[in-house]
Image (cartoon, rainbow, N blue to C red):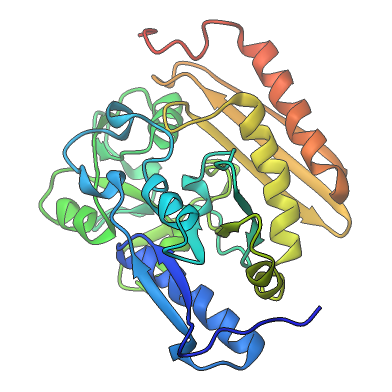
Length: 316
């Protein structure tokens, strides 16, 4: 099949959120496509799209309505052909795409770990009893309170720069950021210490960039095939199958990580009560091609062990 390449007259339009990290991911996508086909920058156009999750900064994400906060407007523009592809942080992505769209292209995964960020301290164990910790992630909050019920967790929204300013102002002793984001922004100056996944299992698909397209757009499909990273794809199939079976959203503390060893896949998953009072974890090992079934199987085990009221938001 011959690939129809974009030109300066008909550039490939890449849709993205406007945050510094989202733009870095869009530029990485552009650069990988440019190199794969030996094209110039002007064969691509970065289109910034305002999304609800970025527009509303003064309320927790769960209060705005969990799913699609960082994706809905971008997907609408993709369906209406205002853009040709959409670049997303995979950990923001709902497990099911709107009719007419497909998400099957993943760039090589960055560092999956969470990073402990503090101007003064190096790790969780150095936090004094009752210390104030800032995070807007329900998963991180639940994991923290599960290990350290003494901590006070405060809401911490905003981009990396905003959160660092809050730390500098003493709003909290520490916060947590995805190591991948810091790496992509080349923010070596941030006082960050990566946390071993054994101590804090990351969000499903953390560190992965996904590229969404229209199902019927074969031209774009052929372009994207050249930049798809197969190992990342295998890992995300398992992790997102786990999430889908749990029906996870921004409102449920869920963690999951798939790792490859040759043709074997090792999947770990965890669900937590929002207040951190209980965590249930499990794992599966199997063939790299069996990830979807392993994810579903592990999710069903954790659901069975958790019981009906485990995810009840009114539990206190």
